[in-house]
Length: 117
Image (cartoon, rainbow, N blue to C red; front, side):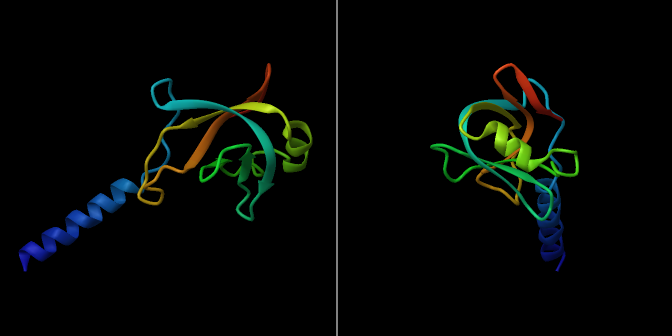
């Protein structure tokens, strides 16, 4: 009985550890990619997703971007068809074991900083 209880507590501990929030960005835990924007969409949860040319299966998004004052329509008008630099925190989670959801901490286009966390 104690073994089953111990295993259950261990599993809960691992799950909680895997559900930790995205850490604060630093030079050591961020990665920057460059790609052409094909589209931008907002979700019902106010996230803003960037659809990128030749990038499938990876979601780059600004968490609660609309709540932070970003306008998806203005971003779409300005960025679609342009090359952008997207910086995200390299973070693994049980909710995203493949690491395909990329929480953006900075977006720039040329010399213009569009967003910074």
